Length: 227
Image: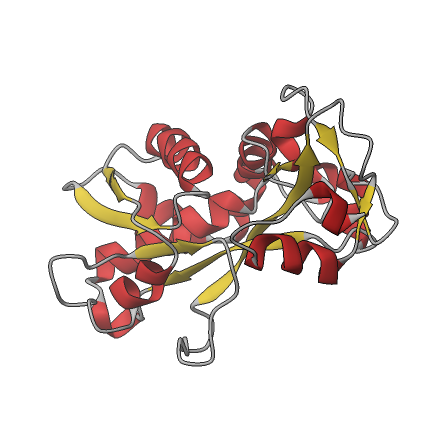
């Protein structure tokens, strides 16, 4: 099977090296461990938002890049590609960007719809819960139904429908048909994926991409066939 790198320690399963490289956070960050994926986001275009919606979307995204936001991402098992200590604090961001302070001011409640990847859901929910303490008028509504709905709900076929989203999350890259407008998409963090077997398994300790593909493409395969 396979699990997230964050779940490995508590799983009691045996991790397989991938192409000779053991799964570690450091390996994910430096790229030496290749079995990984990005957690990405895309948002509605400005012309498809009210001025209040757009301002709060921008403020929320800025919060995700603050020390406070990055700490939350890390606490929910997201793998960061930059040091938290080198990121600006939320207070510094607000001081540098007066439009964010303006967005945070008390006013009528604004509902922001978030969805997309179920893998990113716990990170997204934790971030919005923390951000709502900074901005009580920000009301987050989550409906995570899969990565394919992230683009559809923000800029695609569902952007004006019942499944519309202000912010969509993906646990993969945008496809060639999911073309986002400039400055409306980005990366939240990374996730490591680990191929695992029973702890008593002595057949495999390392797996190559071709073998992994063979295993998952087969409806029936024996351990003798994968030696």
